Length: 144
Image 1 (tube, rainbow, N blue to C red):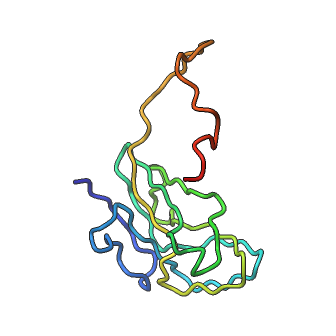
Image 2: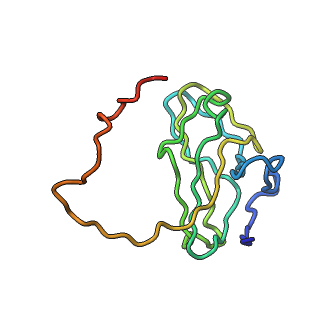
């Protein structure tokens, strides 16, 4: 089991934990009350800084209910935090764009993260023929 050192930058948010042990993803919470007007962008502070294990990175994505509940989308679609972003003030943020007027309260669960090992070193070998059967192009498997 890996150990991650975490610094809470807000005493208003719940401590990180697995939700009911049913997911590999861990919810992150808004550390401030944020009011957004439709079309507005804000970096929403998540109230934490972490020291990830060497060779790992965190992927931050919206929760499945984030858009339904708050009408916001994550502008970079997936945030990546690498292990070098680990100082006392290296707070994690959720870059949000409001699709409607909304209010996010302190402690609202707005996104989630999990950690992944870094991709192994790879090289590319150029070829004229991949030698595999074509699938028919993007979207070729239909809707169902």
